[in-house]
Length: 181
Image 1 (cartoon, rainbow, N blue to C red):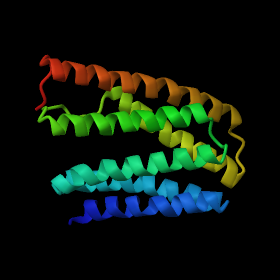
Image 2 (image 1 turned 135 degrees about the vertical axis):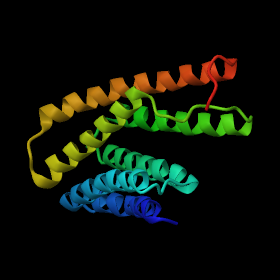
Image 3 (image 1 turned 180 degrees about the vertical axis):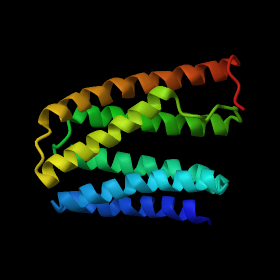
Image 4 (image 1 turned 90 degrees about the horizontal axis):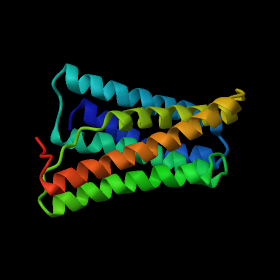
């Protein structure tokens, strides 16, 4: 257990606290915890790369913490009617598709590439900005209604493109036209 893994674990453990803050209408606290969690993701990645502290545990723990945080936020904000249901469903379904595809491939001994697609990185960035904007608008009283509407549609489009991209990658992998590293 190294420092980047401890940071990822702390981010994972912050998810129920962030959900609790939202459910308890402590939205300013949820905003700042979400910002701190986002910064922790950048910090653990920097430390892991800069000080050669990458590990097999970190390779699993970091994306699990990221997915848990984002899905937890989307579901909680969706249930609170602060995000449209359709975008919540798209985001959660895409993540389930990715995890399910990974598990299925692993079960069948299929070698697959694990690097995220460029559109997936954009999608994750837009998801983070959308959650921060929603929490900032509600918790800090910043008027971001127009920006949030644009972000919702941008997240929707990039979520569909990202999910489709992974489906194409998996189809190629299963057909033998794309082999993992």
